[in-house]
View 1 (cartoon, rainbow, N blue to C red):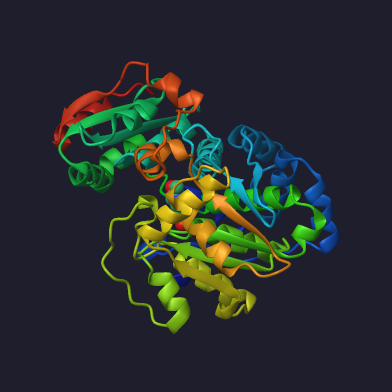
View 2: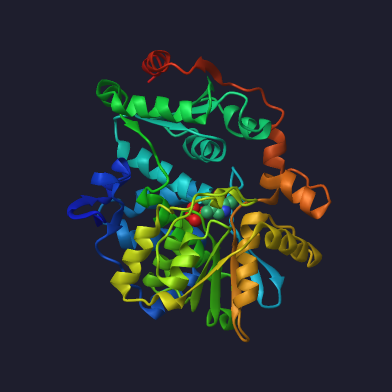
Length: 429
Ligand SMILES: *Cc1c(COP(=O)(O)O)cnc(C)c1O
């Protein structure tokens, strides 16, 4: 697969290069040069297959020229080893639950596939992933790479500034996962990571890679669960399907739109945000005017300059789709709380991110349509706010409860680059 840089169409790279590099020149995003399309009969056949087989075929349509079917099958099998069930919430609405992976959020799908692909293309040159986290991404990265040969992971986080449960989730793994509690705040951690990437000798010696969230491999992986959702729906729902996506950086929505461009029957998408509403305002008045980011209940969506948006624009341009076909809504925290209670009354315990998508869907779904909203995180991940809103206790999922009892394996380090550098160079190969 060839990809081009959205900021400079002359820069073209292979899929393998794009995975290793992440971003192109001027921080430009990579986008596929060819957009494969399946015939309707192929789509119907794909929908009959199991998750792993179907996902391998979908991904092959993009990258078969660079990754063998066998290798891809192994990677998909290892990455997608947990289910993505569609759970009925009302007669005409269901939730696609994407939170049954090791860190209880949909980012496990993209993160784990990216990790498998990076290990696959690393060859005999071990890669070191270096990243800073304020909590969530660290856990997803750690679990995605855990146990992979030829990849070492070093995660920096601010000592005492992440929740104890979050810390347990990724600092108890050991093996190829090295966690560093830094005496400083998140910005200090990020500054250290930046210094490491600016240190050319170090970067070369360790084959440093950032495994960041805009890596194209993540999006390709996320396409697969949209097909998995449709495969679980009855025929009449498939024909009238509206999908609502809780959005922050708009990676998930991009993947959904790519699924549609491959031929998946989706009548319409809805982009749901919280008060950080740059995109809904753009879709209603055509003006791109980011406001300062505000903190909300759905904090993984607190983004006012969504970094995947240029990919959405490019896809609309390439497919000659109209913006009017994309539904949108910005949902306030007050409405999100009411919506969580409404869902609980229906017998469905959700969390703030998914609730924004459900609200937009419920408000915009028309007679005869079937609505699907994405459940992007397990309610237990937002235990405190969900318990306060619903006035009831939530129990921890087993995987998380087990981790809570394990000892922390983190190293403690002052926020000094010289000490980090020394530590990195002393890591076992
Ligand atoms: C990351 C995240 C989102 C937003 O996904 P994007 O792809 O960035 O739009 C929504 N919900 C949860 C729980 C998340 O972690």
